[in-house]
Length: 459
Image 1 (spheres, rainbow, N blue to C red):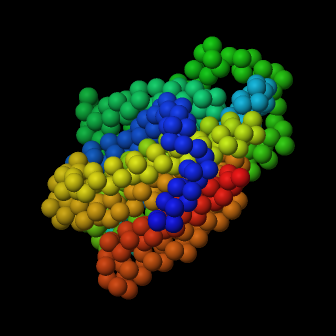
Image 2: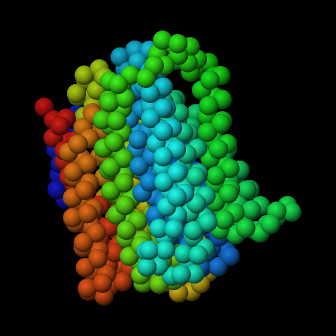
Image 3: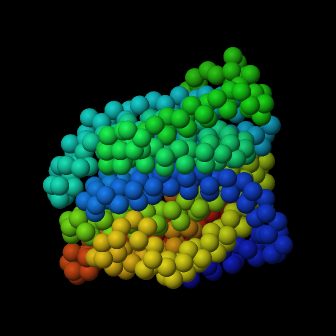
């Protein structure tokens, strides 16, 4: 990480003095915080499900963890497909081209809808794949029906994200935030009804969590569509539908040029965590439950970094549309510095409250002790995790996606996973070995990605 800090320091010297950095950060934060809240609510859905299911028993918690690990890969593939919309819309917005922005929205929505349908079908038909992962049979039996419902729920989630990406690209990030925040108590209420069998409903336990998530995601997609088609802010773009809503090969190709590599980047990162989660499942249901607790908490803090990343990407894309390289550099460096400061805060909180946080999810003493030890390792990689997320977004904002995809592959699959496997099973370090692999992979990713952005925007 010392190499990364030195690179950021050099870039700061080129980018301008401290006041310039603070000025750009003040413009990025108002754009970022709605994105952060939107991302946190998405993770909060999983946290609510996990906390309520964990109150039933640790086997249900382990089953939820197994499904989360396996569904994560296709879920982030779908999310990645939508990622081409916001930076390209931001570029069109920077150029004042409303017709192009409307065309990007339509083509991006069609691509995302097709991807959502295909992913939902594949997951539903492949639900019995869970029986071949060498997991605890009791955990697998609980996981299969939950997996089926969560797979179907990817379709409305991806449709919602495609529409949200359009609003985000126009810098109206509060739209998705508002809908997501309203959805959060709705999801909690539905979980309470279906998991525990309240208000006359049958007690469905883990399956009830899936039903609640599916219902909430459908409502989110409907709400987003209603806003886009009726709010005065978006009407100028919707009114261009007769001339702009046409499937164009060039536009689809441009969206996929960013969307497909973004999907691969997210899939390789999420896949590394998922494969690691499956390997941890070989160590037993108790360890798997503890791993899921620590991973949920780390995922929650990560969503703030993703929000910063998206905001930085949108602003850099806008500057890229104006061909303003010095502004791109200032926006990028200020966002990166903010992510590192945030990582420090998260690391301190994980260290201070590692013994208390796991009780949110479970009260089993063995599970709590293991989870607390893993949170110490989660604290170690907070800076790397935050800064690598921002690095990916900044490079996406300047349409640089192919080389970063290679870097992510190297960081997670050549460095992180092998190191984790060796430490865990050959050096008998158990779950801690897997998490040390996370530290190595995330650090490598952060250094490679941010060094590239600094190099690409230096004069």
